[in-house]
Length: 381
Length: 211
Image (cartoon, rainbow over all chains, first blue to last red; front, side, top):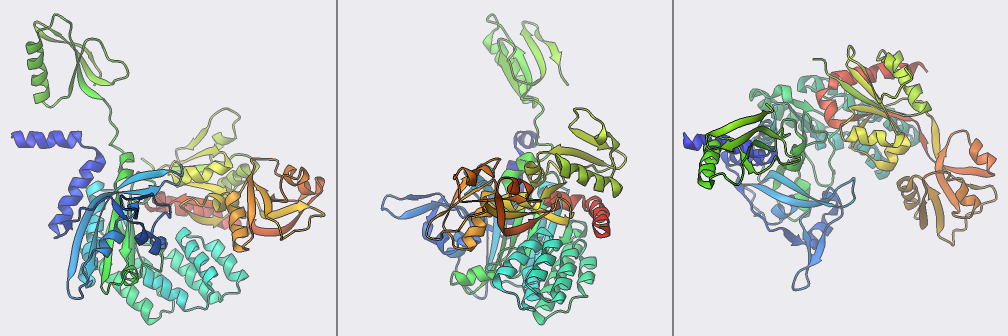
């Protein structure tokens, strides 16, 4: 009984993001992932070579004792890949829970961001992909029952663009507009760069094909597909089917507006949202191209959960600073007081003993301690 | 309870025009026309809530989810690049971002070009593409003064009719990009209120096409 009490107490004491850390850890361990505890520093060189992979390009750097230029980690994935073993017939499963340092957009200053996530590296097959995406969906589920996981396939999008002759500058803009669901500016650029009307037609279908898997895939059927696109769509379909079987179909959307950098990501990409949090809380994908850039043969897929954004989740707001405030005066017997406080804390309430009513603190009830015991002065419940 | 959609509209003439479009599309909220000091206007039956915001702040309200959708000029979206969906070109508030200067201005490419603007990111982007070395002078208003007082060589600003420029003996000579008002949506809101937001978008799109 005692153990259960403690657990319940912990649930109350823990913040949303701390609870999420525990739940995610046990989830990832269940599927055979082992934790990868990292040092906070990494050689700066690693980030310079893969700058575009990073979300923000500003990095905190400093010299270590031997004069080598180091950085506070802006990203965990690169370090994990760097240290992964190259094997073509097995997979390595790791998860992490680390702080990274990035520029926050609003204040233009560095911010510490707590991330949890996992990477599956090596000989990736469809089962591995399903497993990672299932874990991504379950990660969201562990945080809130109101979640959405959006899935896209970079292979499909890049295959579609490769069908047409588009210069690099226009292509970069189009990819950007796909990410904004911005059809009107795609029209403008197709007109001004004299691009094929068929491209505009295809992109219109692509941008409007979001939501439920079956509907989205049906809409896409009007696009003439290359072999690459067909394979991509088949992959997307088979992964969604697995998730459907897990009863998650209401929470899974196809949405091609998730466009990560095509130089790094090549397959499935996905983003997770929780109701009540204005930005995505989970982001990931298949990044074989990054692996190749770093001289590894295998494939890789993984994701990260941004735990710091969970602070804003509803229900995480504290109504009271403390449950009970006990007022006592000089004459009170300390050991009797201690006993009384212990009695209250043992019953699961938090207690603050004060000589006068504390200012700026919200409490559930106010008690007065005297020889006979407690006298209730105020009850805010 | 009906899902509430929060809509941020830009304060001023453009905002009123845009509200009229929302009204025509069937998302009216009569209390918004009353003269009072209220900041927020609700129509609970339709499940919509409007509020006026400074035009340059609309994108921030939407990006951070205080508003589910909003209307912002393309100038603001280009300048701040908020992480939002840009769902529709409303085809109102049409103007252009242009480079202007005194009528007799000759671009001396030997020197660093001094550019006064309210939109430093747009200006920087434009000249970076041209590989031109520039010095950006960020001003918050009355940009037209800058070339007259020789604070800058050129200005990068919004040109609507060109009358203000003309009155000050200035002239636009390069268009950077066309501007109009856009319907934007918070990315997470779009996932959880898809139907409601799509309905508003469709209603407005029908009006845009009629024009």
